[in-house]
Each structure stands twice: as C-alpha cells, then as structure tokens.
Length: 362
Picture 1 (cartoon, helix red, strand yellow):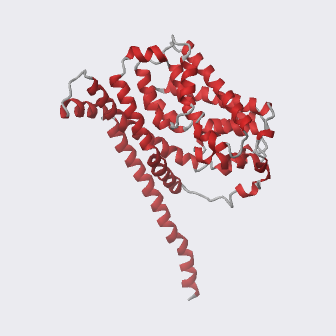
Picture 2 (cartoon, one colour):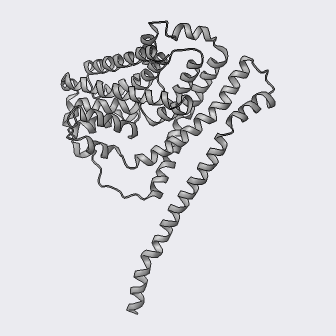
Picture 3 (cartoon, one colour):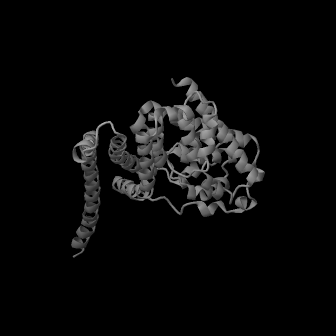
C-alpha cells in the first residue's frame, strides 16, 4: 500500500507538469501561427487599399477624395498591425522590467551614469500619464536622485516603443533611429541639468515623508515563457484597446491633410524657410493631448505635404513629452517653479533638435 502511495506521489509532479508544458507549447504555437498570418496580411495591404478605392468604390484616380480614402484604408490596418506587434513584443520584454525592478536598478546610481540608465529603462518600462505621480514618488523615496528621476519621466513617454516602431514602419529605420537618439539625449541632458540645479526644495514636502517600503513588491513571481506570452497578449488587449481611437482620429486627420491640404501651403508654414516654425510647433504641441499612436499618422501626412522633418519632430516631441495633462498631474508632487524649469529645459532641447534637423537633414 505504501509503495502505491510513493508511486502516486512520484507520478503526481509529472502529471501536473504536463498541462503546464502543453499550455506553454500551445501559446508558442498560436503565437507563431499568428505571426505567419500577420505577415501574409501585411504584405497585401497596398493591393487591398487600391482595390477598395478604385475598383470597389470606383473613385476617380487622382482626385482628392481618392487620395484621402486610399491613405486611410492603407494606413489604418498598417498602423494597427504594427501596433499589435510592438505592444506584444514589449509586453513580453516588460515582464522582465517591472516598475519595482526599475527602481531597484536605479537606486543608488550616481548622476550621469544614472541619467543614461534611467533614460534607457524608460523606453521599455510601463508608463502613462496617470502613472507619473506614483512612479515619481516611488523613485524619490527609493533614494534615486531627482535628476535621474526626471531622465526617466522624460524618456518613458517620449521615446516609447510605440513611437519607435511606428516611425520605423512608416518612415524607415533612419528616422526612427534619429528620433530615438535625440529623444534619449534630451532626456539625459535635461535630467542632468535639473540635478545640477538643486531643485529638490521645489518637490512637495510630503513626498519625502512617504514610506519607500509601500512601493516595494511583496515578492518576485517566477514566470515561464507561456506566462510571458500571455502577458504580451494581455498588453495588446489593454494598450491597443485604449489607444485605437487616437489612432483612428490621427489617421482621419492625416487622410484629410494628405488629400485636401495643398503642399505649398504646408511647406510655407512648416518648411525650413520659416524660422519661427519650430518654436510655433512646440507651443502648439504642448497643450495638445495625444500619444505616439495618435500623432504619428498626422506627422506622416505633414511630412508628405512638405513640412520640414525637424519642425514636425519638434511638434511630435512637444505633444508627447510636454503634455499639459501630465503637468497637471505632476503638480500634485511638484511645485510650480520646478514644473516651469522642467518645461523650459525640455522645451529648449526640443527646439535645438528641431533646428538641427532642419539644417542637417536635406
């Protein structure tokens, strides 16, 4: 009888482990099949857009309406498919870099090296406007210098994975690499300057009284690849489910610009010849509220109509990196002089990027 119990006990782990392995294998297989289907559909989007515009709807080729419809029909599924892929991939990556782990990595790091590391971690760490305050409190109470904290807060929304992949898909790797490089430089430099100015006194006093232990996780959870793939799919449902209205709105605006705005008009107000276009683009972008998924289709249409790359990127960076709603939320933990200093330093960096791009990129 005892022998049977021992055999049953020995066999129990094997039996219970099989469903886990089977589930992981099923998730991997479904991911591979989904990737194959994605690639097949993505390769035929251009032909589908032309068929729907000119064969099904029978719009006149060369008309403004046809240009707008073809732009929207082609870019809407393209942007959404790119968004699904990048969010899924980064959802898997983020299973290795939780906000709590990011705080532990940055805790104790000195400035300069800490600014660079914080800016890089901002690219892959979950962040949205609503999480700015808890992230700020968690970083400060963990002993992370104020300048290093701001490098993260600047990089996370501006140089995020959605912006990079959509820029890569729509404009190529050169524009995506330039955007990432300049965005990281702004985040590192602005955080370093803020740290050197000694602005800690402009942080609300109650922030430093918050217990750092309250932000720490109770314990690490071991995840296998099946769990990480599930987190990637959960990220797609969560993030894509929240940003798709912005994507559609941005594409609708972009389609209208693409089809109906004369190229000479856009070049005259956002071209290289208008010296005031870069600061005007930054000032217009700050009060706007959008994310990368919503603003990049507009950027694509503006560039197609003759707007200068530096001016358009300055506009995009100001919309994403200097969001007015984020300022309002950060006012809970920062006093007005620190918010003004933060805006001025980051804004100056964006202006420099805009002018440099307009001069260098021909």
